[in-house]
Image (cartoon, rainbow, N blue to C red; front, side, top):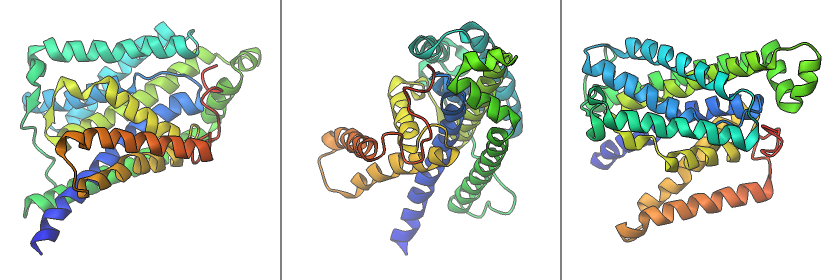
Length: 301
């Protein structure tokens, strides 16, 4: 019974982390897989969401206020980013969007309100009425809330990509010049896609802050970018279902290493080795990923 009690928080931690990453991957897939915009700025917007929640907590504001603030800030920044990079293609867009990650990290490290290099600690977990019996029940309730939010976001994105907007996004991905010749303002639709996808990634950051209860500048790193790109590629571009399946596979399988006895010094290295092997195997069997509908070299041409 004691072992089960200690194992439940671990399972909830893994499930919560998968939910958070799934939101980031869903956002990335909307812009990269469905619209063909090879932008990697979503880690920056994830960080913006996390800091929006942390600073809101520091100022005495709540969970809903953090989402509202994060949405406003994300909309403004993603709009500016879109207008500045909307004419760029492929690698040039990726490099331009990559700079936002470093910019957000530098601001977080040097802004007193954001806690500087030490970040903000002791962020409260969202408490739901009736589930405050114990830390485990409260954590279970919050993970259930996160899962509900993920389901709502997935449903709305599914409706979006199946709508006229979704068809236009896919048309831009496949042949932007043809869409322009049909009279569509592709820059406007690419801007809309980036804003929506950035807000989804930001939402993951807000959930992260209240889940981990600590936000530091190191959460916005290049290593995290490589991790989410691996999840995106394994699940497959142009598939919302693939975004979630890829996240589950790429995050949960290496967790098995926690139950293998090995020196702590090599656990981190072994984890990255397992992730690399998983990525290579999946791409060898299915070059487009598990549910992918488009090759990565076809996206963001």
